[in-house]
Amino acid sequence: MLHLKRKELVHTDNIFAPVSGQVIELSTVSDPVFAQKMMGEGFAIMPDADESAVVAPVSGEVMIAQGHALGIRRDDGLEFLVHVGIDTVGLKGAPFKVHVKQGKQVASGDKVVSVDWSQIEAAQLDQTVMVLITNSQSNLAALDVDYQHVGLGDLLGKASAKA
Image 1: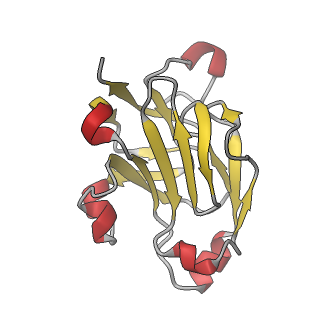
Image 2 (image 1 turned 180 degrees about the horizontal axis):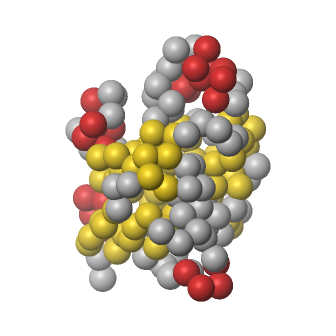
């Protein structure tokens, strides 16, 4: 995998790794809402948790900026949700620092959230990071993901919107 080089890899279908770690099938995560794809198609990453940065997996407009959850609408209409950890909403934002605001534009690879993984671990919560396409049922034509270990900002797949 190539590390993110915006000038060379910018393509509307590209998806980049929001964290470093092992990319896994969404169906294998411990939360049935995510695993059964009730929130949409996608994938998950078991984070290395050795770096605090979470970066935007795609370019677009920030729709949600809550720390544990970040929503971005791409120009083609696909809506991506990056959900950091499982049941982390109960931590009331403590392990997260949000670096973006709702309504603002971000580019893939921009730092959007910082995470203190030790607080999530201390709360005995699952650290898995999910990347979901929340409007996949109506708008997703194809999703192709490489299930391997990725570094922060690595190209890991493509998502194409219906025409």
